[in-house]
Length: 160
Length: 90
Image 1 (cartoon, rainbow over the protein chains, first blue to last red):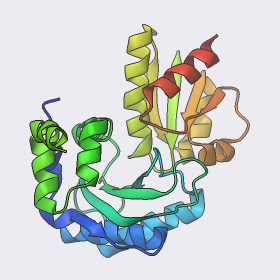
Image 2 (cartoon, chains in turn purple, green; image 1 turned 45 degrees about the vertical axis):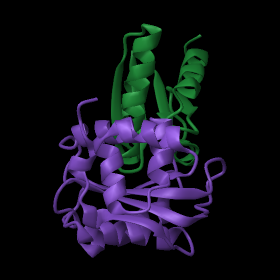
Image 3 (spheres, helix red, strand yellow; image 1 turned 60 degrees about the vertical axis):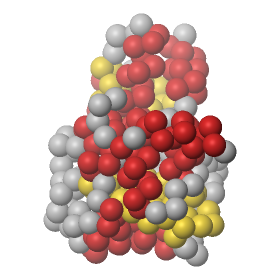
Image 4 (cartoon, each protein chain N blue to C red; image 1 turned 90 degrees about the vertical axis):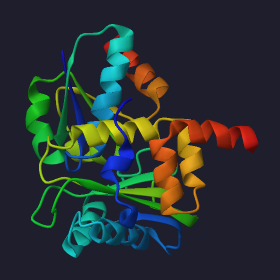
């Protein structure tokens, strides 16, 4: 648990209280946020949407959570993440895990070079309390602070 | 024993599923190799695997293989993974 997800996440790649009309708009937000952080080009956004069109909403891997991603391609500039929380959750057409309120955009230039980042991501997404606090965060700075300082989550819980 | 965690692209959800499956296997004391794979190579890899873990949408894509195909609804629910793996190994 020494890996800090905030190291892989640029403030420019975080959106809170974002507004999306549907799943395509939600993935587009995650793609724009990746591009804003210099992780991908806009082409990658289209690839992420095409992946869902082809394979279905399998990227909704837990209740309320979609991991938007595509395969390694020239549109990927480096391994990285984006983090988008929605003001109003949207449906991805998943049978069990809809509606989605958090979209994590993910890009990697190869299959193996980003395992530490994935471990850090899994650590955050599996920590129910930390995840709840992150979903309620009001700014990119607050998201990064919560990721960097797990103690903040406990403090917030005590005050709520 | 060989277990394959399958996702569409092989970089994201299958890696998360592989990590959590390894965690469950350690708790259960079961020795197995878990590999992450994308849907394109999964069919070939499933030939010498006992178990394939994936999501419902992709289970349909994998189609008919000798390995047992198990559908996981919540990739972060260790209880669900534990229950379904235990059921498959009995």
